[in-house]
Image 1 (cartoon, one colour):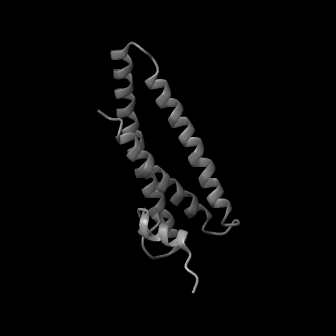
Image 2 (cartoon, helix red, strand yellow):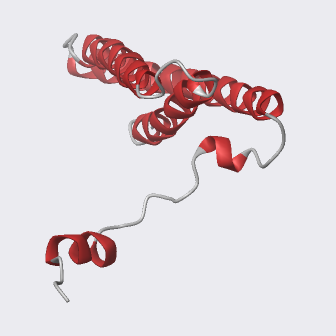
Length: 128
């Protein structure tokens, strides 16, 4: 029996991000029900990002005022624009892997939820 060491390392040594995707979190049911649940979850994630982004902008503006430099707020804006472009491109790719199948929309929104959760955590770190 051949042991694949890199696979074992990844399985046992790296942190587990999670096994369930957003569509699975929505439970069973019809594709219409899952789609509605995923869409609702994405709306909540996007709202959370906006809230954290507003707080981060306030913190960035305060830092720029205190330091007398105007670099933090523009850097945050550039980072958010770049993240949004990345999210859309990455999730479009994920959707493309479904080959136009009926689960494409759910896959795209699930991708946006997963990336949005990470973005919200990142923004939280910069709120004072």
